[in-house]
Length: 194
Image (cartoon, rainbow, N blue to C red):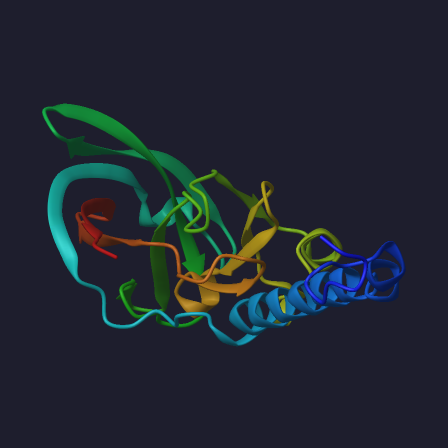
């Protein structure tokens, strides 16, 4: 090869083009960041009409155990996976308004939600303090209502919005459990298929 070969890149020419790699890298990062931010902020799926699958009948609590909105009872709902029975972490919450997929009896409104985060299957915690919800999960619930928060990636779910993801990377709402009341006892009788 001669020194005047047009296919040969000299060190000088290479150094003049050094800026292309970081510009492409930064452009790619900002494109990824913009798409991810759009999905997290505007791409959340609202809970619709639940599609419940009948499951085991499991007694959770008595209606009188949940005295006021915000009271809750955590439980493990038995579900069949293959030939074995597994425990699904769940929670029964008394909410202030009727929720789709919930249960209302008189002035008492209940909803049961899976506590398994729809982002990466971590277990959500029941957060009763609005200060913790706003600092850790970047969501201040209206009227200081409790939320379910996933400590793995800081997704927040609002029981007063039927378990909708309101903050963080989770896009889908928490699955709801079908409820039934018999003789003042609250039973879970099925699980929503998402």
